[in-house]
Image (tube, rainbow, N blue to C red; front, side, top):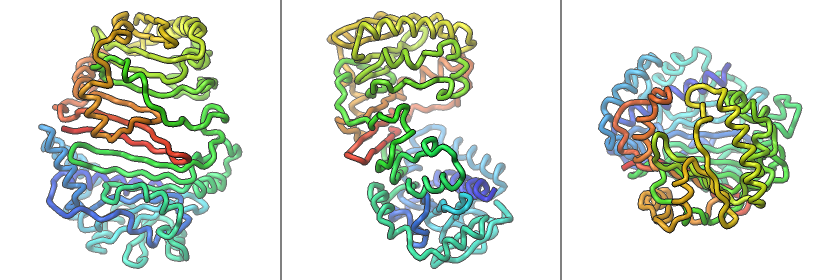
Length: 470
């Protein structure tokens, strides 16, 4: 119970920060987050630092982004009311004076996973009162200049008695060395400690709980034109993590399909397909709703493995009555891929015909053509024609190029996702009622693009997602 209670408390604090941060104020940029690493035990499984200084440069930047939305004031008022109703707390009286410039959380490898929170409160009595309102079982201890709190006395003693500190741990140093000093959130996880923790919890099948990294780190950073989430990891062991054990991580590649995909797409996902990647049973691997949907196609994923290969792109363009979807792939055997595609489509239509609502795909046309070692599959003949034409291409699309630049996406990635939010959100809002979806109302025209991509440098992998606001 202690773990869940502390997490709930942290969530309340995070919500409070979001609400308060929206008020905006001009303060100096916060220094590097993670000060509590100087007292956190070296064997911490994970460590998270949150900027809780609402006068910091990061929170001022967030407020600047929100000012680009016409509904900003209404959103802040709603968030404030919801926060106060659900938490029974007042930001100015209960939360703000109880927190320091950052709120840090440590996950410890105790007999049961435990969390310890750390802060340097402006008013210690206010922190004590806040913690009691969140959970009467929370205890506190003073460790140096920090106040540590947890529902586990053993966890607090672990922090107090630690002889080696996280800040001096070489693994931690390597992980956070990748992160921005001025960030809203910084996070770290130790794969070795996490694996030992999982093993101590009595898992019988080691391969089912194998941690795929030696360390991982991530941060959330606000800038003048959007918000970025970045993550990094150093390879540990990959056994049992990927669909088949022999699959190595995807190496970086330069997309060739961006020179063939038509300009003006709403969305494109570009990735490399490894042979045999889909050779596992959907009954065990897919979420329950999809298991039911694909119950009439037991060989669905194996068929996909025959159809897809090499660099593959899935992209969406405007269309009537629904957007056009096109897949371009480079299978090893195009003739076999076409035969497998026909079988796959029959199985999909058989399954889709029994579904209801937005999942009834049985009437959607699918066309395909083999061309120069590529297989082009689309919901319209025009989609195939435009891919094959000499018209304007994605590599020269102004929105795509702008998104690439804003997201700092390199020429070589391990795969990328691009979404033109400015063009796609109005379509989604229009189609929502037809699909039985209830979508948030309001002017979201400030949302421009979303770009995500992966990178790799030897044993280190990276991930970045950028939401462009303008």
